[in-house]
Length: 225
Length: 310
Image 1: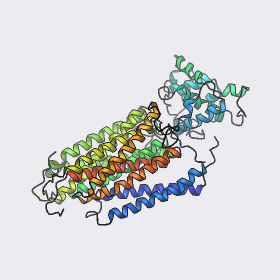
Image 2: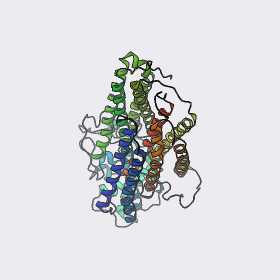
Image 3: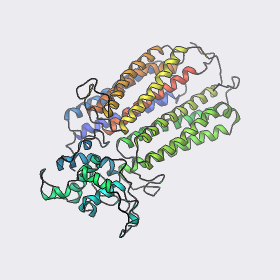
Image 4: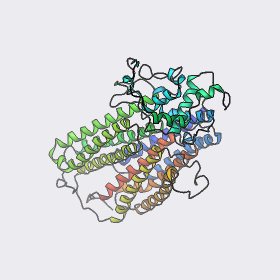
């Protein structure tokens, strides 16, 4: 869960400031072309716009190039690159959890928050969750099918104000869900007991969710109440 | 539709429609950029229900939730602006005759856009729905711009002669359609998570022409499309630089600068692993190029006031 070492805040701020200027410039340009000001474009309009665009490009390129040189810019949370799609049954647990972090930010963090605190009562916290500490099959079942049908399960207690979790069986592959579930179990279920290295110790046996586990849960489906 | 100008007399109320439609078009542009930020931050499901957010009108204060909720809030403002334009136009017979068709198109596109927005949530951000949501937004923006332009002409009320200046027109129409396609292709790259399918530039994993399959194919087609579009836009800008309409000339003059900015943003988007703000600026610049081309195309087709010097 520790974020990659970020770029210097000043450089990051400069880059974001430059991009904000670009967006403002574009809104201004569009307003001009929609005839916001009375009268047609005056002479020199194109030359000034060229100058503005060029100045903005330079203003943008300098901090961004510095960012690129620092090499520390963490990939965004947009999920592209999909390192989790390369997760297989043989991927070591920490590699799988690392790939799952970005997928988690993309799929789960909107509700459960990046640090797993959730937004109670609508979205339960994942930290110290009994589902994450329980059997892998039950964990995978919640992720695959959501909680829409849970009220039919015997013994299910509905918490007041709790929202319904959507089903991700159609949206995510086995590999992505395996990476996400591994990340969740390693990071949230056992705070302070993260396995130090890859390997077959007791912790990784409990925490490591493999794509085949998700596939098995997919086949098993939701048990009839 | 055939222009029906009222015999050279300014149509009453057209100025108000032009102002209102302009403001709504600008808000719609901002809404498209906000939509790109929602997409790039993965906030699309931050409100997992629709139209309420977390079952409430005012949602919990958390960044991603606020982005998604803000997108819906600005969408509400744009909808109200469009309805105001429609109400104003349909209440006045001369405006209704001249603008009714365009306003009806805008209303249909708005209705589709609202349904598509709900579907993106209900279908859990299925990529086809999200891309269609973007495509429909661009068509809706074009409709608003067309209303603003047409209303501005009605306000001037000078029909003049429609010139037979066909060269720039064909080029501008082709450039507008090609830009629309390229923006949609970029939307597909984002929704399919193909943004980093090729982590290097200009080649893909060191190959200039990799096998065009799957996500790599999608990413590379977006890049090849960008090179072709650059050539087309620079050519059109060159061809339109001495058009009659001053705004077409201005568009021709700034197009190459914007294309350059867009290429820089696209390249840094790949090299920096798609940071949210660059992704948003990339879509904003693409949308701006498209909007300027729509304005220029409409101006190139508009009847020229007879008194204007060429």
